[in-house]
Length: 396
Image: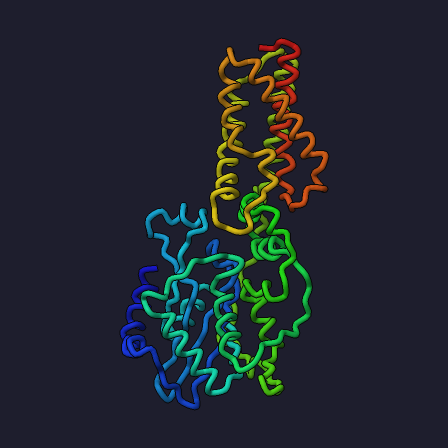
């Protein structure tokens, strides 16, 4: 990130006169391009790809890439603010060659789509970018689905062309969750985390326009789009497509065996075995209930925070709160204090009933629930079932 910010500072030094004046005069040879970088498994945020806007004007010796995807992990409370939906991203820029080298090093391909714009459209987009690059305008409130590095270039192009951009690519309806889960298909723990964090709104079908929050959907949509002018003329939005950097094929990805599904089914059978041992011996391991319900309560606190406090638009309602919720922390305390035995029984009874209904109605819940959640919920169900049995059988 420090290297990137040095690049931005250098670029701002070259652009500072233009930023102050708020205007730029492009030559007839200037052109704008959309740069689409393919996903890589290098980092959590690189699996979705990236979109940049290239301005190449050889007459004025300008070849820059404008990038709406800059953020700084080192800022105070970054994780908290990101979870709360208060993440601020910035518009930055770099010299074209620096941008290309960065993605070459990642192993990403970079595809350029040269936009078929007239001089007036190019001029307006350039001036808009310069205004957006001003320090007071560079920062914006990032939203993964609706306001990100891909949606901003789309909005920019649509706002400043003479006429309307019409999209012709085949629309295959997909939910937001389906699209991001496909992106993280090689990272099962990341998929599981997203499924836990995102509520039922993520299962809404995205419109054809909304699909462009992911860079490769934007690339496909622009490839077949046309501009219908105010005078009725029609022209292609993209005049030519160039592969600037070829993707370096990843080494064969080793199948990950320690997946959430394997992990939680293992937990389920281990807990089932321990519970059977308790039943046979007529004993009770309080530490087991405390540990399981304490962890469930912590996870539920995070989900509740995302659901009720976070500003993210796709986290509420979240049906996983039926099993993972902050009240499980209270249950964890009840189970370790003997004199609260009756309260613990009633808690187990209510929890057992709620989880039974959840498991029976699993496929009717209006939200995609990760398959690994079945053994996770089942583990808590077993412990509450045994908790009810213990009280009835007077097992201490």
